[in-house]
Image 1 (cartoon, rainbow, N blue to C red):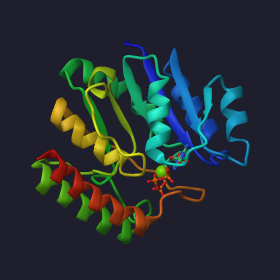
Image 2 (tube, rainbow, N blue to C red):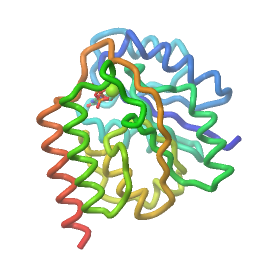
Image 3 (cartoon, helix red, strand yellow):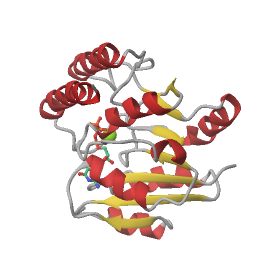
Length: 221
Ligand SMILES: Nc1nc2c(ncn2[C@@H]2O[C@H](COP(=O)(O)OP(=O)(O)OP(=O)(O)O)[C@@H](O)[C@H]2O)c(=O)[nH]1
Ligand SMILES: [Mg+2]
């Protein structure tokens, strides 16, 4: 097994961070880095008690948190996953096996294929479909879930990436850069229901991400 570093960005995820970390720890010797921005609950305490490296990142931003986390990561394989318990942490091991066998650089977890009416609202489905279509058109790719927030990829690929956003569009930027510099595949995963308050602002982040796809395409020319 290559050395694995998992980064989990958090703001007030005390209800779910424990089970996410415990599931990841079943993989064995894994570096788990929790990048926390100003949680007012027990998120940091729980993560520390489970042996995670906890970094306090005062600057707000989903992309900022990931950049800070990956800058501290010592593994050869990087993993990103939400702290809200919605993604299946137990499939990190099988994903890494697939990467090794099939010589893949970046695996993105696709929530669209297995979605249902409970875990995916109509608004999210329509919004994500618009973003997916824009990404397919602008970047000539076959992406199913451009907004997925769970990925497994090689550090060597991450080092080639440029212009990653500090905000929520970090996730789509990562995939655009992965398509440019390496081999990306998507794997359908089950998506859980968020039990706590989301940080995502559906309308604001949706329009902002659409604009960012466009800008990234323009800047590439
Ligand atoms: N450190 C840090 N973490 C953040 C920030 N924004 C979001 N997060 C965390 O990043 C993860 C993704 O945020 P979510 O609110 O779950 O966003 P999402 O998954 O797109 O939206 P939902 O589908 O509603 O869950 C969660 O673990 C959040 O706690 C931030 O500015 N800083
Ligand atoms: Mg989430």
